[in-house]
Length: 425
Image (cartoon, rainbow, N blue to C red; front, side, top):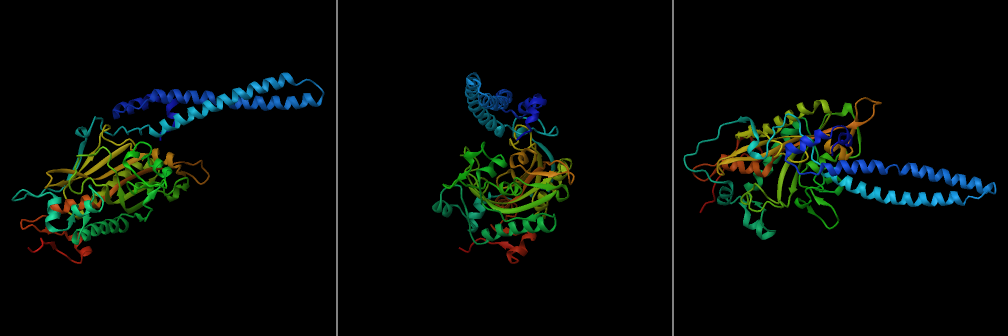
């Protein structure tokens, strides 16, 4: 959520940001509601006048005077106050709804563009391997090896699910453990094992609600299955005031993630790229405003370290204003090379939000021990999505005989297994 004062002090900055994003958000209506809301807050003056007259009526009556004229004026004030209170409730309801939907304001460093075609390659690491014969996509590799079973998952629940079998399940667990060990032991993150359900308040805090409700799974009790560990980690200090000495705070968590993928029919419908349930290690930081840019770069380096450990070619992309989600003020995507799919595929999205999420979560800190609390800045990123990492390993490490070499870094987590061989006919 943006700062309300910005609506009054610099609305053109918001207009420029919306234009750069290609957003059709109705800023004129929000400004109109803000002005109307402030005018209706004059109801407090009417209440004060009503209370003053009520006291005068008592004094007049005790002295034997006629208080009917005063009573009539009080009755008129009560009616006016009632009307204004009802109107104020309606205006504030619409105002709050629009404030909950307005996109964040991108940083000046974000490239201006309309869609993914305008994203900018910032860096590239590693060299894609040359294959003697056309490489297979991961879903074919996993099925042939008997380690990914899409048909069984469909029988169990339906489309867009997968069952890891044998070394397929073992490798994904190994990837998750490698990620958690690296981020906690080498990068200084504190591991969290959070709930996999979240309240409406928590999902509003991360700005998944109200805009992305169609992408969420909701229980009959009113809880939501988390779409990412970003939700519980960002709400870990919901409503709290932290001390500057406690910042930055680094957290990481492994969770399953649940997304309905509303409107995604036909997009990457095969394999592990776009599932209703997938697994991910999330990185999250609470930082001060002046350190946010540097901390985002460190977070990116932390996520990239996993790809380098696994020797997977990747590139860093700066997302443009039109391709960036509505919550971040800056986003970098890490895209891994998938030879079987013959393209780069997002494997991590790392974003900083300024105080956009902290305002919604009411998470603040004191710059000095006795200072007035201000909002923290938040950021997060995948470190990494384990299913997509598994897919990248299968495609990049496939061998001519149909086997898949296990990356050196994973072997200690897989009982020393050096290679996954095809089943014997």
